[in-house]
Amino acid sequence: MPVVAIVGRPNVGKSTLFNRIFGRRKALVEDFPGVTRDRNYAEVTRFERPFTLIDTGGFEPQSQERLLQQMREQSQLAIEEADLIVFLLDVQQGLTPADQEVAAMLRRVDKPVLFAINKVDGERQEQAAAEFYALGVEELFTVSAEHGLGINDLVANILDRLPSAPGPAAAEEVTRIAVIGRPNVGKSSLVNRLLGFERVVANPVAGTTRDSIDTAFVYNRKPYLLIDTAGIRRKGKVSQKLEKFSVVQALKALERAHVVIMVIDAVEGVTEQDLTVAGYAHEQGRALMLVVNKWDAVEKDNQTLGRFVEDIRINFKFLPYAPILFVSALTGQRVAKIMAEIEKVAAEYNRQVTTGELNKALEMAVTAHPPAMHQGRRLKIFYATQVGVRPPSFMIFVSKAEGFHFSYERYLTNKIREAFGFQGTPIRLIFRDRERR
Ligand SMILES: Nc1nc2c(ncn2[C@@H]2O[C@H](COP(=O)(O)OP(=O)(O)OP(=O)(O)O)[C@@H](O)[C@H]2O)c(=O)[nH]1
Ligand SMILES: Nc1nc2c(ncn2[C@@H]2O[C@H](COP(=O)(O)OP(=O)(O)OP(=O)(O)O)[C@@H](O)[C@H]2O)c(=O)[nH]1
Image 1 (cartoon, rainbow, N blue to C red):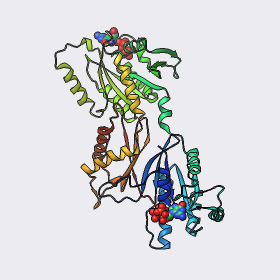
Image 2: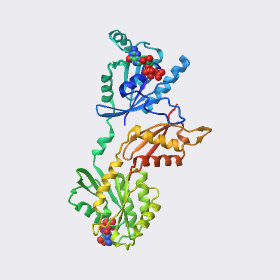
Image 3: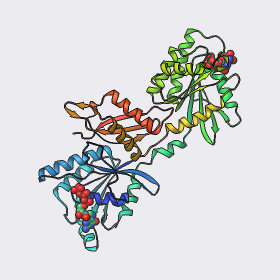
Image 4: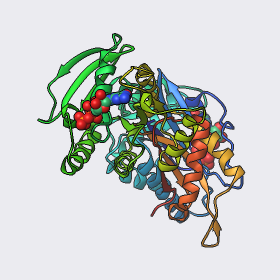
């Protein structure tokens, strides 16, 4: 979700503008317990375009010197975090040297910056606002945050300049599926079954590489591309050499895939090679599901399934999120479930949660189990926002990123999963220092 930051000197009306754009009073976001908050943020949707709005205000300057320093820091922060900056000025106070300096700083930034003059409540101020052209900007927006004047024009210009939201657009793209697994686990049998179902409208297209064949198809009115590896078409006995080759093929297929179907032979069980390839998929941020094939060939009692699941969970302990399906390509048993599951996993892979929901979940996690001490100070989490999909990635603004231990990252990851699911997809947490010099 794109981020819009409002910067400006104290008292120019940042909070008032924030509330105006947000459309509500800003007491909406509670602080994390024990955390001093110096910024307000809100999720705003205007003209069906969501963005995160940050009010960077609230500092109390002790002196002119200090004011300038704080404005520099505040602007730097906005420059780093935001996709667009609204620099708010005050027609009553007029143009000050601090404004001049910050404006110069913002002009050098490779991001859209809108210069808005506030407290333009009437004709008289409208004329006075012309003074701000001395900042050397081409366009000024005059607003009255208090009286709601010029706000729609400003918002429309914000939306025009925002990078387009990745969420829905990405979801419409083709989902690329790679079926991987050791030789002879039944990949081609499975693929043939999958594409054989009448609901799947298959259309083979030439692969982008010489040794793969991609098949485009539609399932539930959504487009998919099945990435076939060369090994799929190969029949008969396999040598050691071929086995190694199949790993290379699998890794190549992975590079292009969104969702990976890792096929495991129910009779042979999980092998080292399966773990290697699955580990790679995880690191590359691919969604993954485990399909245990040849389930028909296993002698079963009422504990077989449970034991098998347990065994897989222990082996693939780095993939607690991967769904497991037990199928038989030979009989067709449960093969139809695969596409239904892929559809779900692909949705999770593309899922975008709101900043509000995300921070609520984090707040609960932090309350239940606060971060540790680091160099004599308690680590703090300020807020988080989802910065990407495929896989879902979250940027968490903290007091000291390097202080966050792997175990706490795992804890937060688990809490995010508890709150949102994200079945089948890895998720990424990126810790960022809120203050950087
Ligand atoms: N006349 C007039 N006054 C305004 C307008 N917008 C805000 N104000 C007033 O300006 C003062 C400061 O507004 P805030 O929104 O608190 O300013 P701020 O920039 O958030 O201040 P900090 O939190 O200290 O950074 C308040 O008394 C507002 O009522 C406006 O459009 N016209
Ligand atoms: N019992 C049983 N046998 C299966 C099943 N699926 C595939 N097989 C058999 O397993 C063997 C290998 O199947 P393939 O589909 O060629 O396997 P593959 O993974 O594509 O093999 P490579 O092309 O070597 O990578 C064949 O003899 C299949 O008949 C199944 O669900 N149950």
